[in-house]
Structure formats: C-alpha cells, structure tokens
Length: 234
Image (cartoon, rainbow, N blue to C red; front, side):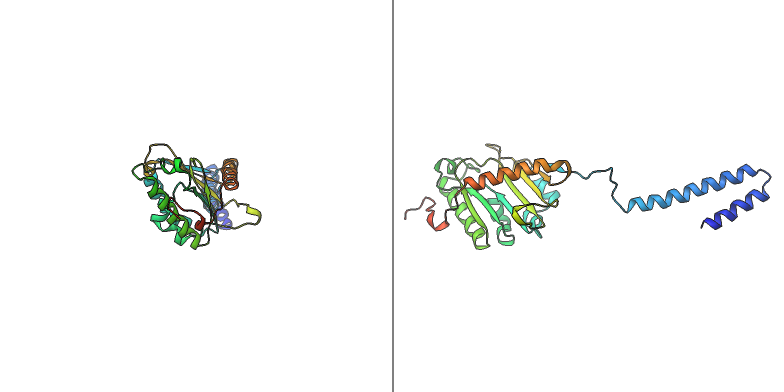
C-alpha cells in the first residue's frame, strides 16, 4: 500500500507543474487511510478512558424486568446467589427457586407476629404471610438452599450474585448486587431498585451491601423448617 502511494505521489510531483499540490494530495490521502485503519483497530477494543457503568436504576419492577429480564433468566448461569426477601413471593411466582439454587436465603421469621401483620401486600393477613414463607422455604430447601429466618424488619430486598464461585465467600468482578427499596405502604411492584457492580467505583458500595448481608445472616436463625409451626397448632 505504501509503495503504491509513493508511486502515485512521485508521478504527481514529476508531471505536475505545481509540485506542492502533489505533496498536498499525497499527505491528505495518507492521513485518510491511516485514520481509517486506526479507527477500525480502536473499534475492536474498549477504550481505557471510557468506563462502563457501575450502577443502574429502575423506577419499578416492570422497568427492571423489561431491561434485565425475569429473575430466572437473570440468575441463569450464576454459580453463587445470596438473597434477602420479605416473603419471597416474587421468587415463588417466577419459579426461580426451583430453577436456581440460592446458596443462602434469608426470609422474615414467621414467628415474628408483628412483622407477619405488617408485611406487604397489606391485603394478606398474618396466616397468609406465614404460609407463603413456609412454601418458599420448602421449595428453596428442596433445591439445596440454606434458609435462615430474620426476626425484625428486613427493609430492602437484596440479591447478590456471581458467575464464579470463589473460595472463602469472596466475590469476583463479575458479581453484582440488586437492591429493591422496601418503602412502607408501597406495592411491591412499584418499588424502585438499583443494581451495583463489583468493579471500579462500584466496589465500595457493593462491599457495603455484602457486609449488610453477612451481618443479617449472622443474626438470623437457621431453625429447621420442621421446628417452625408457622402459626399452626402442634
């Protein structure tokens, strides 16, 4: 290619009475070719100056599902999944508990009568919440999940997932945390949520939510399901 352009430039220089125009044309042509070539090379690799987003926000569950897909599809292929749910209703309805093994799962303790009477949706009574938690825990346990129960307000729902299962409960840069805000008196489907990735500027926030999960896990009860009456008489 360079030999061709050199030949063209030489021809222009020799035969043109205006020698400077030959050099100008050759220079412009060379710049165009080099620019095109470098542009193609740069398109094939991510620029180190442009960082990928470390967090994303979704105003409600509908927008979250529209963008990220349903929970079962989102967690497909992940080797480690930890989660905190109030009752786990959405996980039961979506079938994700049967399709994906939650290594660790925290649910509201059904023996906490105050919480059973104040969970969303408010249309359900305490017994309905207890039965739902029982069903969710049973499905998860049969799929190999380690289920704990937390007595007290859970606050935000949380999912921490990683495509790689590292030793010592560590998470890779592929890991992410999805936080759904538990706003009182707001329908679960209307709750805003955001996703944080364990990389770059998002790493500190990710570790903060990971620490939150570990604290709740340590303070929750691993009481076996058969020892929980769920409001039933024994």
